[in-house]
Image (cartoon, rainbow, N blue to C red; front, side, top):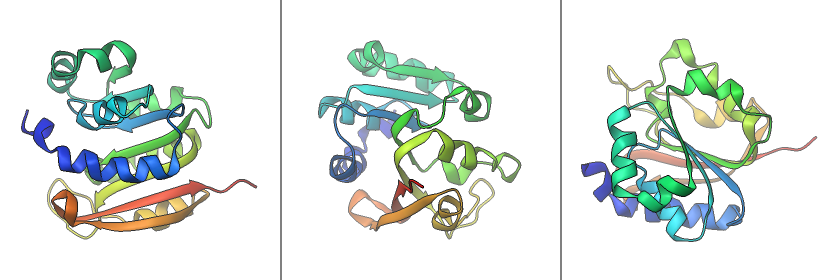
Length: 176
């Protein structure tokens, strides 16, 4: 539940989403937890929301804390590895994650190419990239997603969001 109280993180994310994605766009959050970020976007006019969350407890809390969002959004309670291949190419105008990709085990790194495949326009990552810990796998997301057809268009440290060790990156899909 303490995750829901970190509204400054959702505000920080919203500034970038509003700059790049129209409110009528389809949005996917990978690792939506109790839905704080999705709900914040929802309250600011975004309606085409989908969330993937591995934790049953978090998905249940989302329904209790944000019932309007839960009624209007598609919330998939599953590991991302089990559902990512089911989406069509370019399904979402925006795909984003906040402190989730860093927990993807190296055996599941194949999902990054799938994320690139289903992202139609923009991808936003907010991840720890330098810290290695037993449950954090440091990666260079700029290199990863540029290899899958994206160009980085913005980068920011996340200090104002209270995430000192994190980097926000915005990527735009390059059309050939």
